[in-house]
Image 1: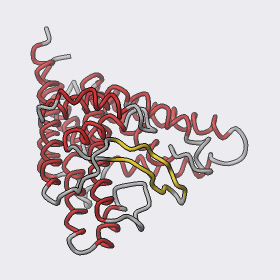
Image 2: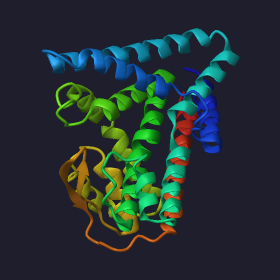
Image 3: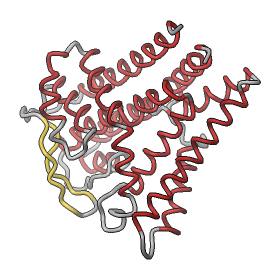
Image 4: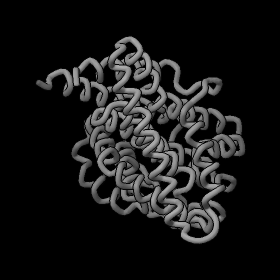
Length: 309
């Protein structure tokens, strides 16, 4: 594949996300993914063979997305301008860095108006219950989700874009959306969403570890690799613990611990030992880490394709 077919849309999509983020007025394919999943789950998550039905729904939706974008990618290569416009737009849709940073900052801003406002705003971006969290727990939750979603919402789609083009990025987004909607261990989803959750674990294995390494690189903290290896594998998720551990190492703070999810107490392990106070100014540092990691990974992908024979 000619390197410009990957590099040009990547740079345009990256810049669009940097400038625009995820405007709520703009139609977004992830909303279409979510609506489709909701319809499929409602029709299929009933009766017998629940696991098989969930697996079939997952495979069907991921296959449709892969086939659609692969075909569009191939056909549009005959019309270069159309190809660059189409691919750039969907690279933009695949990335969620600016919106992730903006939402994290919005929680810190809401906290200045009171803990209840902070709890409410945090509930928009995390799966845990927020109505009993104190100020420090809210700040910790923001940093945990910003590090975890740096992997899920930025590095992973970029990784699969680099490997397979826009079909890879959007196929990943469908898998991740399936996991976020049905990949829970609640009574309703534990069997139906099990395959989607496991598939999400597989596709995030490398991106999560790449994210953690890049976080240490951009902050000159590579000596913290043993810390990341120690605490990253203690997380209930095989992947989320690594970027979370990297950020905990960088900030020298403590993440994790018990939290309520869907009215159920989940005893998540602690990441780190320094249970210090998180200061308001640190949101800017964490936002800066996310921006630097994204820039560096985009630059790495561009360099690899530019210098490939």
